[in-house]
Each structure stands twice: as structure tokens, then as C-alpha cells.
Length: 430
Image (tube, rainbow, N blue to C red):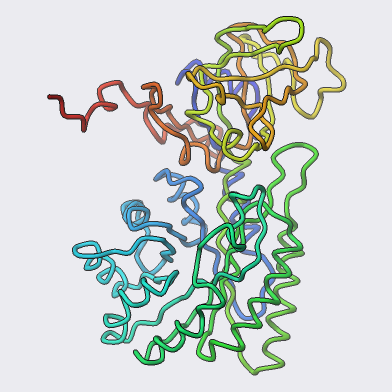
């Protein structure tokens, strides 16, 4: 946990619970680690903003020199409203913009936005404009093999349809050549949270089809998805080691072909996951008989932390008394008293509203301390794919506030708590 028990207590008293809290120093340090990744002929780091799109978070990240990877036109708009210029944004999306949206995309491309072609239909939709304006394009290739924390986070094998599949590349190249288009960048993202060795393996595969199909390419985007160890027993991907490997392969490509390729990466989780936590409060305790479970009921669950239900992900729990005393921490379980297997659940009317699930969606009790009603439970490593991913307003619960702990220790509110009227703002009665 990147926040002290006293900071957690102060935030809970000032802003209530549940509340997301982020640490500025951790985010900046992570950005700098990525920017210093070894590279042969230049490196561009893009932040996958779908991980956490809060305006202040985007501003903090881009202030370090990291640019933006957007997954929709609306994400592009949010980045622009956060002060990011179009020429600092890569758009990789399933969308097929038509009408006014297409005009908007074309305008952004002329301002420097990099458009990453992900299908033959996208190529056909944009090729006339690109040819007329001599726009250089990026293309995302589906390599047929991937990896991920779970099957639904594997974006490189037959489970997913991201990018132009290798079997369709010849057709894409043919149509591109007919339109005199230039594919300046080749992009592959094989999944999130998977085996770092698979990320290395993909570099060899990707450089192979860059050499075969893309003689005009000057850049390769190896994607993101760097593994993050959220739990004490898990390890982060070694960014330096991955950079060394990529550097060697890009240099080898140059020696073989005479082509110097600039490198891009686009991590999201790695930047913000462990910089954030979710502060919740125990509102009830329940048991389901001698053969059942000991439940700890929180005032925030799946509507603010969806990853356990979606992926069977584990997040560390820190329990703090209402007075600010540490009751239990994930890394100290073995040394603590009154530790038992318990199940943390939320307040939503869903059996799946639990932070203790396995990858099949079944209850999986976790060892933890014994909190009382009113104590705080901090769900750690929720800086990525928590606020941005959660099913806000389910059961008409309100979106929580978000707080940033600045380098000087001061607290800065970066998102106000939603009020009830805002839930119904766009509803129209009979």
C-alpha cells in the first residue's frame, strides 16, 4: 500500500467511503521507469488511458513526457480536454466512424493524431482520405498468439478479434498499395498481465512480419500489458530486462536489413495500478452457518472494484481500525492474531459482488484480520481498471470521489462524489 494508515483515516473522514486514492510520486516514478527503458533507435511511451482516464491522472502522466494511447474517439476527446495535443495521441479502436464522427477523426488526423488501422473495413473507410492527404498510417496486426492474466485479457489469439489477422495481411497490403498508402508503424498487443516471456517471444514474431510485409515502416509498437504483481507473492515484469531484449532484437533487425526502427510501448496498468487504492468501510458482519463463510460486508464492492468478478483477480487487503490502527496487512498475515479465512463482499444485490472470487467466479475465502463494523478495509492496487471499468450506478449507488496524494503530502480532490440528481440527469419520464 502506497498510503499510510493515518492518510487513509484522514481521507475517510474528509471524503467519506468508498473513495479512490492515488499517489502522485508512484505514478511519476513508474512513468520515469518506462521512459528509461533501454532502446536502440528511440522510444516513445504511450499511456493506455483506458486504465484510468481521470483528467488529473492524464495531466500528471503526460507532464512526464509520456504520450497517450486511446481506445475510442471519446477517449481522444477526454485527452484533448486534459490538455494533450492531437499529435501526442494514438487511436486504436474497434469503432468505424461515419458521418460527423468520420469528419472529426479526419480533422484530428490532420492535426497529427496517429490512426491505427485494426480491420479491413477501417482501412477502406479511411484510405481515400489518407491517400488525398498523404497521411501515414499505423496498422495493428493480429498475430494469432497471445497471453493474458485471464482468457478475456488475451488479445492475441483466436479468442479476440483485435487487429488485422496475419491471414488477411496480404489483402490489407494489396489495398494499401492500390491507394498508395504508407504503413509507417506496425502494432501488436498480445494481452494484459501475461507472461513476460511471451512478450519477448512476440517481438521476434512481429519483427518477422515487419520485414516481410512492411518495407516502409519506421516504427514498431510492441504494445503494453506488462505484468504487475498486485499481491505480495506476485512479481512485476522487469522493465529493464524487457527493454534489453527488445533493444537487442531491434539492433539485430538493423544489422540484417539496414532499417532503424523506433520503438513504442503502451502500458496502462503498469503506470497506475499500484499507485491507487480503494478505501471502504465495514458496514456489517454475517455468517452462513458452521459449514458456511464468515462475511465482511463493505460499503463498496463490484460497483467500484469489478476486476475480481470479471477476471478472478486478487487484490491485497489492508484493515485499519476506526482509530487508525493497523489490524492486518497482506504481507503480515502469518504474524498476526485473530486471523481467519473470511470473505469480503459489497452491498450490491448480486451474489457475485465479492472481492474474494476464483477465476471460475466461486467464493474463495482469504486469510485476514478480524474487523469490526466501522473499521476500514483498503483494497490495494486499484489504480487501474477500477474507477474506469466499474458498473457505476448499479443499484443506483453513487460514483465515489477520487483523491490524489501530492508529493508534499497534501490531499487534492480530483473527482467530486456524484450526487443523486446526477444519476437521473438524462432520464426522461413518461
